[in-house]
Length: 261
Ligand code: ARG
Image (cartoon, rainbow, N blue to C red; front, top):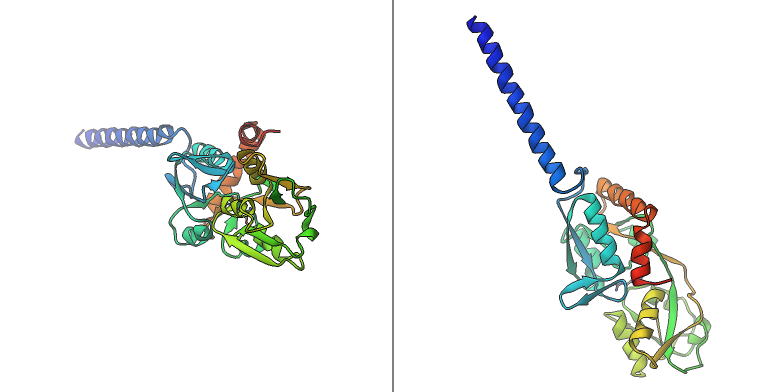
């Protein structure tokens, strides 16, 4: 009988443990609104160069724009808290590899050279380079007209790389931000700026009557979210929720909010 009682007692303890474990698991999963995914941190730290309307920019101390809405939506679906840091463009990839944050979203074009340093998510946005000139300046109609001209770009962007491929450009002036490159055009220290289309559209709206863009984009580029190499589970999880966001119409809502038609 004493033996029987101890078996009963042991079974009771086991049952209690199972119940407690189930409760803890349930609370953990329910608490963040989604089942935890392997390789996804509790807090998703994000690096961006928030000088890039309408993709990422500051309004007071708030991060706003297409990329900011997209990454917050991704974080929500991954069950991660999103914390965003403003980082100079040139420091974004070094900071990612230095583990200062988990991902970079910054209208960053997927390039083979960059893929040597970091991994990219599936493409989430189609952009291209366009030329911005002072309003009414009819000298430049396309890339070949940049021959003999001073071109302003944001340093180490695809705008710089595209300008370097155009023969006979007098000089390429490299600025820390894209708005500074565009201001150089307005102030006549450069003839043209080469920048991403969505930002050109936005800056033309911000400086009405001062600048315009010419022609159509002359490169084809895709933005991706950068993740440090060696984090395949995080990358996979991001790609999965990105798919969902595209499929269920949330992507289109974010697009309509920041880009329009
Ligand atoms: N798409 C261009 C590139 O990847 C420019 C991106 C600049 N982004 C920014 N947030 N400043 O080179």
